[in-house]
Image (tube, rainbow, N blue to C red; front, side, top):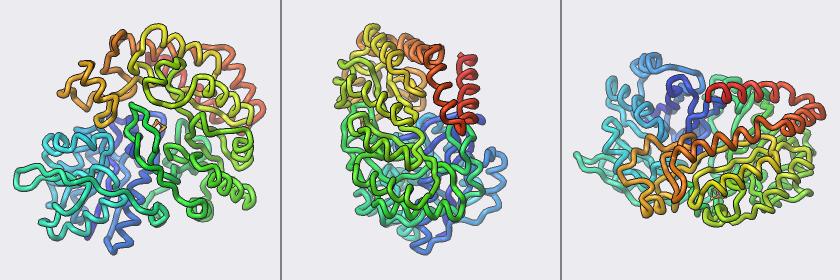
Length: 472
Ligand code: SF4
């Protein structure tokens, strides 16, 4: 089958990330559509003919995309969409329907528990891949020539003679090493992509594992099994990227890259021994890092570790089932900095139990620990999370809530003691506690003096911060 993969255009000219746990509008980063590249290679391996339009990456607008689709010959189009850019992304399906009778297939992880609503509200979408795209997309494309077989494909929702059908959930991929090398040849150039600033190109993201067995109440990945690729399989991809594209920076996009210490040791050892000279970033948890592994990571090119701290209040962390302590978080931030690695921390304002005192505790935590960078979000009650259930039970949101309004920048959910406006204000105060803090500027300037190759990145990061401050 001829399959066209589309990463839809930027949302009103602002870049969008459409990857599993990260389906957000993100103006400071343009990421390669890694999951579509994986799907492309899986489909090619089964004999399908695949092409890609990365409209977000190449900044192709809808008028141009429409012209491109009108001239293409394809039998199905697969595109990713997000909850907050839902109607915008669905224009891909609408345009496709205008020029072709190809199947329109969308992927979105955030709305996995809103499958019926997705199909009913997206009239031009034939099939919704709800989750586990690595397994579901190839099965689906194989089955498409015989439409009656759709009811056998696990993990999809679809329209069947006017009726909406939601099939049983799909199994996860048995062995993540079975995914072939992503079809990188479909990208125009790696120089289109960057995270935060254009420093360190050519840049890409990479999954070395998927899933997370922790059960944080706000997280769409909670209670999914951790599925790692082997160290050798990861290294094979890194070597390939270095040899063929001279890749300079990789952001490991896993929920928790450092879950298996032995695997991290194997990867870091090879990066050092083979002098692969890659700068890399990863996500971790505060309770699985120590000085020894951090030193190895630093030596192997790790430039920054991102950790979810969420709150400076033990009460809030406990209620969120994060299973960490404020004390551990504080120690971990210091440890990462002592290893000479930058530490980016994310916080969430407006989790259950949040009040003015807990907000202040978080602000004090930020001032005390001064992470190199911070991302302050507001709690978003994504369907399927425990937080969503709590919010419905407490009446903080209704079941009729418009999922399009759900994002981590503007609160749509109050708590017992705070209004949505107060939560937004708390987010702003927390940002200010960091970026208007002279000690933070001194600390980060000190880091740049010791690491002059970071000057370009730091300079652009500061410009971004000022733009954010001015936009408020
Ligand atoms: S540790 Fe918690 S927030 Fe992080 S991926 Fe796992 S469940 Fe989600």
